[in-house]
Image (cartoon, rainbow, N blue to C red; front, side, top):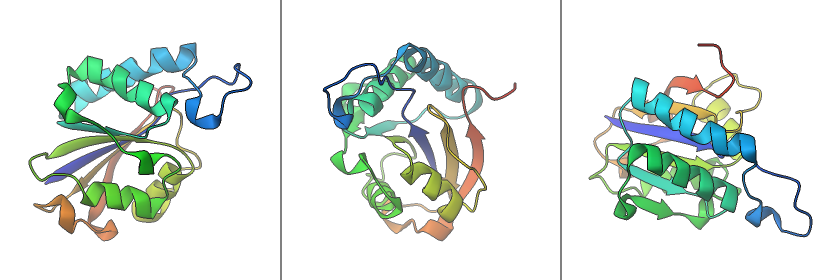
Length: 164
């Protein structure tokens, strides 16, 4: 059984003019929400063994905040440029490329790709994955390389402003 945590980066800042989209940082709320959401994973699910993040600053910084909560060793933290503006095919390619030594992985990416993934691959009915929102999914396979879209099942969707 493989478990995938697909995380939309936390809330980013629009206050800086003159920087490109790739370099946009988190805002204060994003910096607060990311560790809260990582703690929810700790409390409710298995700790991811590998973190793979988009190279965009807001996703990378979200992943760093999660890694501090999880106490993730640096060798289990990877940057994947293709997760920036990733579509379903890019997300599946990333998933299929994960080393089979890991059973629980956390990917940090962006909308609209994450929402499309939820609604098309997992047949969810989610209008828009919230910032710092997390899709918790499972695939009943032994190898990441063999996972196809129909193997993935949505277990839960959690986000910062949901009712407890």
